[in-house]
Image (tube, rainbow, N blue to C red; front, top):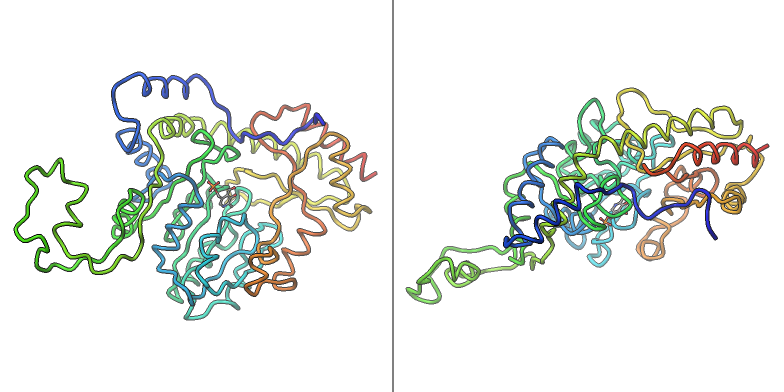
Length: 403
Ligand SMILES: Cc1ncc(COP(=O)(O)O)c(C=O)c1O
């Protein structure tokens, strides 16, 4: 079916700037891996977010995996996560036999709920995973971070939806201990379809990320007798890959390390996309304003309230059907689809996914998220390429269905 308002596969737009930057790289003799462009992208990103370190990774899922490693989460540990996120937020913990506590969400902001967090947290909580849902920083973010830190828990922000979002002018990814960003094709900017960034201030963790993203294990080295006697590489340049393993006794490997960094052309595209981020975000904000203005005139709909402290970048546009709509959410969404508006709803609550139901998740744990998800929440297509006619068509169609 061809849709009047399709849900397209790109959350940002590309132009000659990205093409030129990539072309330049492909046609010269410099390496396409782990070099100056990556360093420049990381430096710019860290400065933009307001943190000391940023490391480009293959995607946000890997950033979250690294974050759970840095937080020291092991089998038997307890963590708390928002229940309302993409499955990648806690996917790396699935095989670790970690005790997951699912936290409900604030009903308007849709981020992790401070008051439920306070009931769940204990001195055993190793980390708190926050997802800033849809482009807005979680409500009560300072109190959430303070509560977690009071219990000694590491705060991991899943910022896949919040590139450039702020609360009181502070950027998502700089509130907690670790920020994880996605540059997937659908995100507000993209590094050619896949990509991610981890942000942090902790120098020790920064050293570990550098190692483990480049196939070096995170191992504990004890200064002890050199196992190869007086062996010394005749040429440090040639032997530098193996220096650590040959000259010291590796006592224990904590993390095997992996190859998980972004290539130079992807980083070059990232730099160009960063320059356009404000344009993309502003267009999303304009779309959201037009939809909000339209929906406010239609009884049975409720739009998200966003006060002036927030810079919401609308990775997702969300509104709620109320009882006055006189139609159930699923029928409503099916009718939108029939009328040519392609709807993708986000996200099926994680505690109800089969993999987590098998580990203690279940209906009733997060009643706010469950009610919103099954009865009232609607996401409409929202991306910079959407034109005004398509926006008006969505408003007109919603009014027709409800009336
Ligand atoms: C909230 C959230 N977390 C994590 C991810 C994973 O991002 P990536 O595709 O870069 O691994 C996504 C991507 O859709 C997401 O929406």
